[in-house]
Image (cartoon, rainbow over all chains, first blue to last red; front, side, top):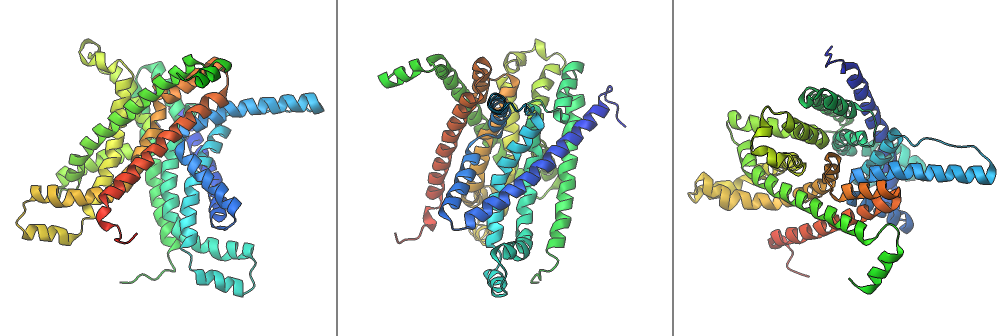
Length: 234
Length: 240
C-alpha cells in the first residue's frame, strides 16, 4: 500500500466518503428525476409548471453557489427552527447541518433536474401500445407506471443515467470546499502541509479516473443486460 | 444613479453601494475569466480536434490521452494542481513568469482553458467525424486537396453540428468558473462569499449571485439560439 508520507490511510477514507456521497446523491437524484419526469408528463398544469420551473432554475445556477447556499443557509434555517420550537413549545431540538447532508441535497437536486430530462425522454420512448394494453387489462395508473413503464423505460434511460453519473462523480469534489473530508480535502491539506501538491493531487486524480473507468464498464454491462430482449436488425 | 435606486440602497443594510460595487467587480472578473478561457480553449481545440481525427495513431493517441485525462478528473483537482503546482516549479520565482503566475487569475485561466479545450476538442471531433461521406467524395471529385476540403467543406458543416453541444459547454464553463473563488479570486461567487462572511446572511448573499448567474446563463442561451438559427437558416422551412 502506498504510504504517501502517512497520508495514505486518510486518503483512502476520503475516497470512501467520495463514493458514499456520490451514491447517496445518485439515489436522491434518481428519485427526484422520476418524480420530475412523471410530473412533466402528467398533463396537470400545476405539476408541469412546477417541474419546468425546477429544471430551468437548476440549470441557471452554478453547483458551487447552490452548495454554499444550502450549507450556510441550511444551518441558519435549522437554527431558527430550533429557536422557534424551544420558545414556543419548549422542545429541545437541534441538529448540525453537516457538509455531507448539504452535499447530498445539492448534488441530488442538480442531477435530479438532469435525470428528469433523461427519464422524460425515456418514458416517451415507451411504445404507447404497451400502455394501452396495460390499461385494457385493467391495470391502475400506478400499476401501469410501476409494472409496464418503469421496466421498459429503464433501457432507454440507461445511457443518460450513465452520463449523468460520470458528471456527478466529478461534482462531488465540490463538497470539499464546504469542509467535507473527502479525498480532495485530505489531499489539499496534505499538499499544503507537505508542500508537495503533485504527490497528493495526482493519486486523487487517478482514483477519479479509475472510478469513471470502472463505472463505464459497469454501465456497459448493465446496458447489455437491459437490451438482451431487443432484436437488432443486421 | 437614478433616485429610486439610491433610495433603495440607502434603506438597505446589505445591498449598499459598497457591496453592489463588490458584486460588480466580481461580475467583471467572472466574465473576463470565462470569456478568455473559452476563446483560448476554442483556438486550442480546433487544431487538436483535427489532429484527433488523424489516421496516424502517433498523432491521434496523445490528443486522446489529453482529453481523457482532463475530462475524467474534476476541474477542481486540475485547478489545485496548477495553482499549487506552479509555485513548486524549481526556480520559477526568479523568472519573469512568476510575475504572471503569482496572481491567482492566471493559474485559474490556464486550468479553465485546458479543461474547456479538452471538452471542445471532443465536441468538434464528433462533428468532423459525422461529416457525410458524400460531401467529402464530392469535394475530392472537384479536385480539392485536404486543406481546402477541411476549410471549405468539413469545418463549416461541422460547425453547424457542433454549435448545440458547444453552447452546453459554454454554460457549463460559466457555472464551473465559480470554483475560481476557492483560490482567492474575487469573482461573482467570491464576492458573495465575502459578503456572506461580513454580514452572516447566506440567503441575501448567495441568492443575489444565483440570480446574476441565471441572467448570464439566459443571455448565453439566447445568443446561442440566435447563432444556431443563423447557421441553420438554410434548413428552415420556407413557409411561416
